[in-house]
Length: 417
Image (cartoon, rainbow, N blue to C red; front, side):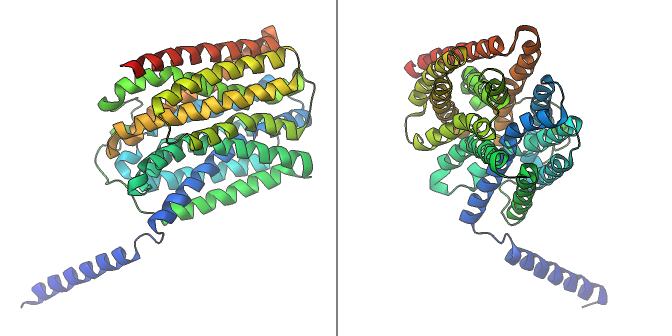
């Protein structure tokens, strides 16, 4: 054997050993731990979505800015999230789930630090913008990763957690922040330091988890803004649009406007109540989504839309008559419809997309959902200055009910086919 041949053989053996060592190192987490840790990291992202809401009224009192700026801070999050979904919603289908999730969680840490050290409302708006980018990158990727990391016989569990984690996390974040505002001397420090630590832990989980998709070409081309729904899912997706409008407009009403409603209509300035009214619909929704996992999805969707119509009607009566128990009762009933309907719809849609197109599907779902979440709230913020808070809130409730009625009719017709 010549020296060149020996060198080549030696290099080959070293490469094999390196590969074997890499394979042995592999992901440090077992599949079940990776699935559970990824779900918890996704919940942390949703915690951060709900957490600032009870603080906004506190910021208004401390810094003395105009109330309409609160809707700007709320809406900028939805706008940046939507742009990110359009640009990077399917990026993880090409470069893998892990790189996108690590980058998104790192951006979340940056956003929490900006919140923590913000000296005025401009910095809060900036923090929400960064948070929107991070959440937009994470949302469809986390949901796809959960379906793929779920145990083989429980793939529906991944879709269920993917739909309930954002809802439940928003509820927990809002309620815990409300408690902090009520009972802790420095609530912003506690809230944003805790969230930053959770995101750092989430990065460690993702680093230790297996990759669930194979890299493929087209990553740069995938950054061209577009909405591409897999062909197999298009019919079902089109029929689901009214449902996405109804459910996420409901979320926008309670997360974006309810603290202002408590202050302006009920003349209450309790951090605990602010957190509770924001938390009730997503909390009940998360529980409903989990409890109804085994119920027939189409039937669940129809009843969920009926619950939203009833719930927003009760809440509207509560606002019109300044009856706080009715507002909470309506939020509870509508919240159950929100979680049950959105979860059941994702259970129908998720199996229709192959693995390498699943993030594209979820990007489309969340694009429609967050348009419904952010745009009406931004319009409502403008209308408050023109027609007042109560008429705006009642009109918003009527629009939610109308979308839910359309969704109910569409899904009832599809169930007969």
